[in-house]
Image (cartoon, rainbow, N blue to C red; front, side, top):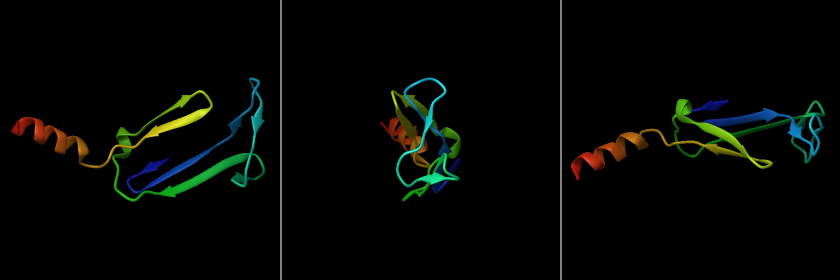
Length: 78
């Protein structure tokens, strides 16, 4: 879940074989789920957030709120 000042990630870690589910570290909830909630230091645009797997890693892009308007204004002024 993405909120203007918080990112929450929950799910099951994938194993090496299709259908395998693993849990590592102390982040498990009910023994088989990963759950992390992060308070963000700046406001983001929740509806512009994207996530994708890159190998076994999850990459999440969180654009700052108002960043697209600032860039558009700078281009217009130039």
